[in-house]
Length: 425
Image (cartoon, rainbow, N blue to C red; front, side):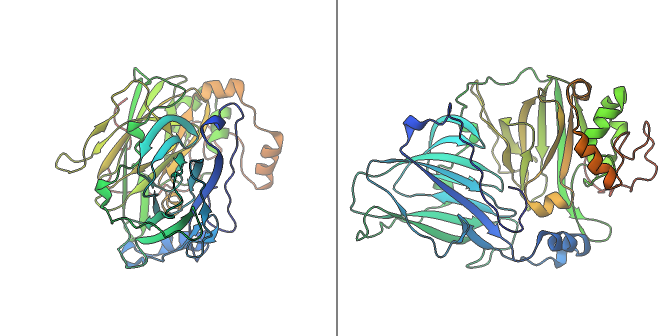
């Protein structure tokens, strides 16, 4: 679930046709959370009123399966038994790394998309990502082990015992056995799960040729008031009087024109069944992001450096069937290229999965096949009535007017100094 306040829980929907039940014996759920000490609205208010230079990290508590990570109960393993470990990052700011030394992780799923089994030593997970791995238990009862969970953030100053933070989930084979010790190894020595090295089980081929190539530049800067502003392109995302779905459904042929959508929606119009390549570029040298897509699981085709003098390597998918997922890390100084087919008509919100970045404007909107939407989608009358009760218009452009007349709508918060929002078609 998105949102960091109150109780949270994982919802696992099991498809009886694709559960791969013959590949494992037992199912274990592992949810990872950073639980903040303040409600989200207070964090958002702070972002709106506090200059970046005065923001002081407020390190949250780590929860594993909803329990303080310092008081976890052990997970019991039986020799030779195969365990499916479903790992879900429900984080709102921090990243998690997960390793089980002495065992190989066979990755079989990422963000709900089943993959061909892919061996890995660990998972490096941004907010919103999910993985399933199959772990075959050792044959011996000689040792117990520790599932290592590292809680960290590259863009928050390091602080001993707080960032990074290390937690260990006991993996118990026998109650009297000692825990096996392993030497500490550097991250670059670990074979982390990598979507560019994975392939989907459904064997969906690389989407090509590309009909529309879109480049979006992301940056986090100080506004003229010194406040924390996040944006894809020139405008920080903000809500408008008429939801973009209703604009797409009620403006006829004009729904195909960006002019009926307010600038702060950062709207991109997609034609039905076009193959679209999104290139997300993060030129920042410090801030890392977690890009999440609603409406599509995208093919991951390439990552690399924004600047040619960077040490970040270029990595390309070289096979025929690239892995799909809906959430991916956009590291500092990195670009990511993903592809989708515009075969799901609708209005789809795309955003950073770090809640404070999302709420401060790091988002854009895909307006997918509005002409098809008008023929096939119907808004429930209850929703329209709810909008009327709240005093929101339910038709017209973003301001509830005709054409490109945005009279009465709040001016968008422009982010100065960014590259063009979209380049290339």
